[in-house]
Amino acid sequence: MAKKVAVVAIGGNSLIKDKNHQSVEDQYLAAKETTHHIADMIEAGWDVAIGHGNGPQVGFILRRSEIAHKVEGMHEIPLDVCGADSQGAIGYALQQTLQNELVNRGIVKPVATVVTQVCVDKNDQAFRNPSKPIGGFMDEGDAKTRARDLGWTVVEDAGRGWRRVVASPIPTEVVELPSVKALIDAGHVVITVGGGGIPVIDNGNHCYEGTAAVIDKDYASSLLARLIKADLFLISTAVEKVALNFGKPNQQLIDRMTLAEAKKYLAEGVHFAKGSMAPKIQAIIWFLEAGGKQAIITNPENIGRALAGDTGTLIVP
Image (cartoon, rainbow, N blue to C red):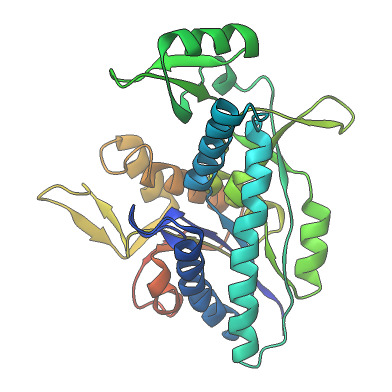
């Protein structure tokens, strides 16, 4: 039987339900819930690569680092290393909960996390216009000192203080792709491009170095899906279906959408919020344009039903 390969991108809600459930234990329980639904996919015959977000987790790591620096004079952790740390910790929660779930179902299938670097173009225009706020608030003096001494870009944030902002460039290469492909081909479940990948730039000749940036996890998962020629790209998020005119009185849920319709709705600029649904639709457009067969957007608990065609939004070429 031919392999059916899916890339599943899981959103922040798969790990943090709300602001009252942010502890490591809470995140583990949320991961367990999500991997239960991914196990349904595996049981139905899919080979799976899992990408995930890491925004809040990187925020926590940075905050701890800032406090430890302020209180104890500890060294601070660079942003790319925060990304690597979060890949390990989130990967651990996802792989352990999924391993346990598969064992309980009598399914023999190894699960592994690959600490994954994702290359971005150092000339990407996002580096000229950093816009993603990271880390805690600073007073003006501290912010300007850091801008001078560390080369940070800092902005005043709506009267709440100053914050560092970094670029959000487009991913161009998954550095560990040969390893990821080898694992999928061997029948392993792979957790990869966590948080969009650790952002690196190529200094020429495939010599990489980390850079302070944030890569959209849906864009990175889309790139992975294109590179491994996945049969399905599934984005698991906070909503059961995609909606036109989201949150407005004339909101309309979509069961099925073609590539042409997705491009039209995205271009209209009124349906999909910039920071949430728009990048998901864009990520799927890129996947389908590159020859992808189908994509689905739904929430974790409806993954099984969406695969059966009973809910979710299906997007086809």
